[in-house]
Length: 262
Image 1 (cartoon, rainbow, N blue to C red):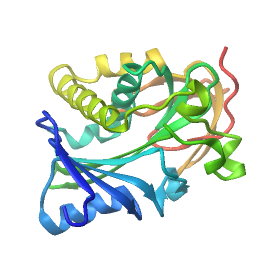
Image 2 (image 1 turned 60 degrees about the vertical axis):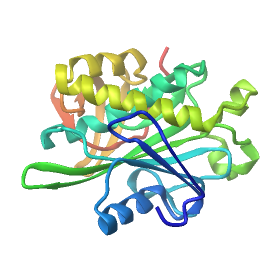
Image 3 (image 1 turned 135 degrees about the horizontal axis):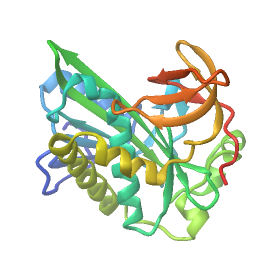
Image 4 (image 1 turned 30 degrees about the horizontal axis):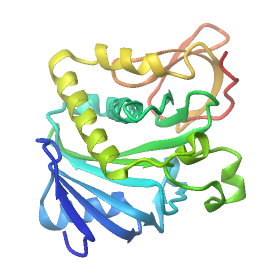
């Protein structure tokens, strides 16, 4: 890949190549441009910094040096009906990878990773896809993690809501080793999904879930809903039970009023 600072290969059928950049606008954008220009798939883009990193709902994702800013460009064997499971799968794989380094995390639907001991946000997942003729042409899985960063690198507003591995554990992780572990865990999760369906995947999510059983408010494209988070569907959707005991299935949204989980 042109202008790549360094490249290295790993033993993965899903994503054998990692391409490292000093600075990009967005790793998702770089991955998409390369796919469209070169018709190539099966790589990860990593950047030391992003000028226009993307968060949920097109929000800017602050990406100072020391974090892990990456996008996995792959084409797994996947039914389009299961696209909603990809953020779940990716978050579970990332959580498992971090746990191998002693970092315990919890997951908040649909795409947030939280430090287990204080529930501060440490990262997120952003999935883009292209589907044609009832098949998945490609997936771009953006993974942003606050790893070796210092808190003063972030804006004052963001500092109140997030944390970093360095802030919590006073240690630095080897980003290359963490990247490789994330790729292998996500690859394993896709293989597990292909062989056994969503049951095992959802069980792994629920072990780390931070909202099921809570009374929450969700802002979705269809409107704002209030109720109790009761389950995750086999397609990765949040199932909300309203005060009138109506079940609402939400495919995408932002949880805006969670209560602390005890």
